[in-house]
Length: 523
Image 1 (cartoon, one colour):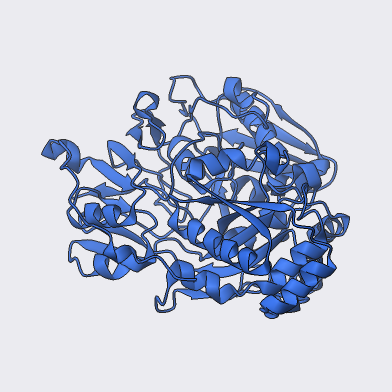
Image 2: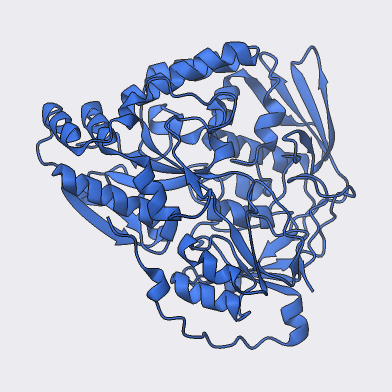
């Protein structure tokens, strides 16, 4: 299929924003990767919501640049009673944006809500007897058995345990919160939020950063800006023009087609800020026909050529992408291709024959594609072309990313507003280990959207958790890859590198596993 030629789009200038020079110097104007439609980082796994959450909320502990877990809101912790209890003590002086003190009971409520949805916590939670507040600054985990991975779960970057006030954290984990009150470096300016257009955060003067230097996502999260403003610009050519003229300061996910244009501008920096590549994901709805049939899922996989997907996203960008025909992050210790032969077929005719043999009877396939999210839209359009060539009864629904995020929660048949296939992307870090590999989780109703159910995958995830070292973990990882290729909870589509762009007067844009705006400023 042909890639869109966005370089032919108009680069007409946007109206200049009416900023006073002083205010502009203290305001970072950002073109985010997607529209912010949900404020709840527990209810949704959308990365744009996680980026918002890193501005508003803080974590008990966080990962440094080496991946080690260090205290953040916590002053520290003590493991006691032969590993059957962990007591955490909060730093003094922590306050929420509404002026209330951060108390141990807020942490307990936040942990319990997060644990209901986080795949890592779900695996660990049977070993947790209780989480209880001891006083205003201390809370304790009481365990049924030692949990050496407890700190890793609490401090992970993929699905962080953000701390909210108890009154908000008491909301059911499957109900979306509407109020964003945290204790992080910036506060959400709710009355300036206009989904689809704009979102604003202001410096929280009551935030007290840790005194050590920032290290990965640990250390001093210092707010050096007065305001962070996100402007939704869905047309990439218009976004590129806003960057080259200085009307915007930071573009999180520039379209790869436009990178040469940005690089020619001496006032724009184009760099790989995020530490991990982005992995393409083709996700089936396992609850509804036709993809409740594993034979039909396998037939589609036989037609997939990851190179087509990656070229659609990253084109011929030098070192911009690679195929990765396994479920674990390529180049990491668990990466393998056991059983991945199905992804090496790459043959439409064989896939058509397999589709017929699996009993496909012309059921409608609804593929929802986000027209305002170029990278994920490109993946979606490659699949739409592939399904059409396979002869499937395809309905391609083009919508915005925010609507897709809301629609993907539906378990209804396609005739009642459901869906058959969606696409997304994931950082490599999120796919490196079974405990937080969101798309490999196959626990039915509690799995990620698409809701695959496979007892063998879940058994193997538990076996990996009990493996004492890498030598015993690797065979389990191979068995997981093999089983995933048999039942196909999703199809891996390869990975690409996603640079960011910012004006040269923006400083402090350090490399990290997530897009964060602390410690950044403007000259």
